[in-house]
Image (tube, rainbow, N blue to C red):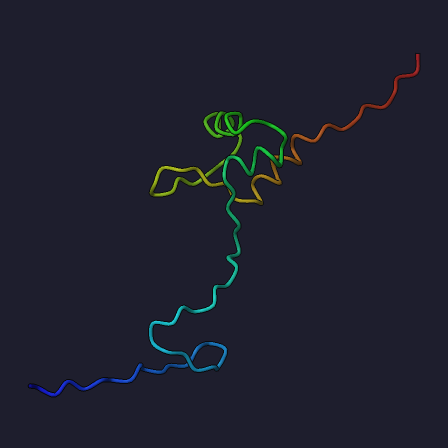
Length: 95
C-alpha cells in the first residue's frame, strides 16, 4: 500500500493581517453599488413592479440584466428618479 501524505491546509494572510486557511471565504465587503430588484424599486416608489419594467423600457430608469435575465437597478438611479418625480406644491394663486 502506497503511503499517502496528508497535507495540512495552506495558510495565507488576509488583507486585515489575520491568517486564513486556503479555501476559506474572505469576509465580504459591501459593494459600492447596491442593486435592487423591480419589487424593491416598486415598494420604494409606491408603484407596481410592472410599472418599473415599463419605465425601464421607456428609458426613464436604467438597469442591468443578470445572466439569468433578471433586471437589477442601482439604488442611486432609483433615488435620482424619485427626486425627479417629486411633486413640488404650487403656490396658491391670489385671485
